Amino acid sequence: MRKFTLLLIGLVFTMQLSAQDSPKTFEFNFYPSIHFGFFSPEDVNQYIADDLSSYTVTFGTTDLIMNFNIGAGLGFRFLNLVEIQPQVEYSIAPKVISGANSYSYSKFSGGMMANFMIPIAPNRKSSIIVGGGMFYNTMSFEEYSGSSMNPRVQAGLSLNNNRFNPQIIFAYDLAKATVDEAEYFELDYSSFRIGVNLNF
Image (cartoon, rainbow, N blue to C red; front, side, top):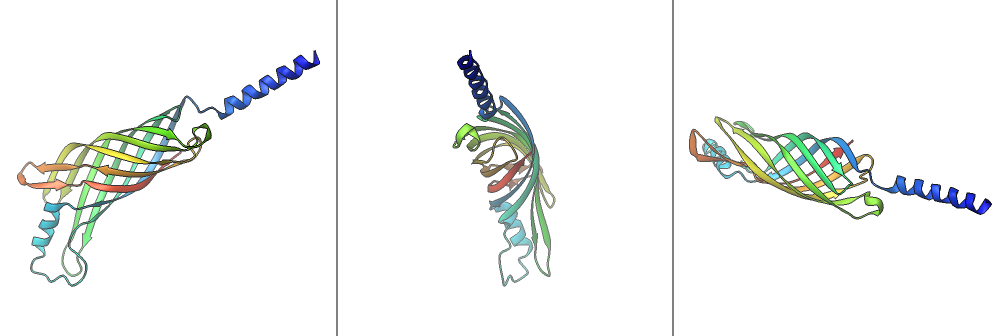
């Protein structure tokens, strides 16, 4: 009887540990995001260069080369292997030319990403992320504006999946639109991005 009791206690204890170590079937997270993008919007940069043609630039460049992105999203995660992320974000690329003009190129985006999570730690606590999705982008610069549906691909690292979960993201965001009123002018916000999603 004593052996049976010890065996039963050991079995219950083992099952309890297994339950604690197993990933949850479903998890829901909210996350803010901060990203930086590097790009080269050809028509926008040419517009700025033409607008400043009467000035002499002695230092730096008139080109926009970097944008800043803030956003928020929701994470629907299954077994720490698949994640769906609806999200919205605002991007801005400001340019201030000392003694002349200032410019601002902005983008508002909404869409959804789907990620596959490749475990690299016991119990899937950390993973490599590979994903892609579609975003509706609305871009504006000076008197020009345009919208389009565009893809985004990303890869990165998801740390500490089961608790506070930062995700380091590297992405390529394809975002282009032709201005309806001026089809010769292309609003190109395509950029390589790096940033972090902070899942709570």
